[in-house]
Image 1 (cartoon, helix red, strand yellow):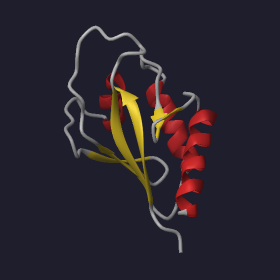
Image 2 (cartoon, rainbow, N blue to C red):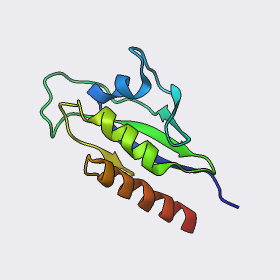
Image 3 (cartoon, rainbow, N blue to C red):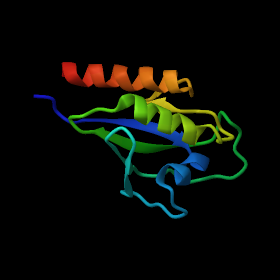
Length: 118
């Protein structure tokens, strides 16, 4: 039996509202997204102004997949949302990820593989 999988991604603040399709989000906000996945906003760090790309804080989002994992749909969706970000940074479980559909798909599949081995 396949168990549900959850992992953390971290995105720049300017991507946050696009991911949730909302102008207002708060800790715990959740949304179903392509790939039979659910995203939920974690605790947000205090924001400072005038960030450079390397210093901008990343916001934690918990991604949960059910039994049916549509990792390619999720990767394509997330890549599209990230495309417009002025801060091109993304991390999965604290590892930097290439912001392309293939790079995100690799990170999702590696994370799923690791979780299944636990």
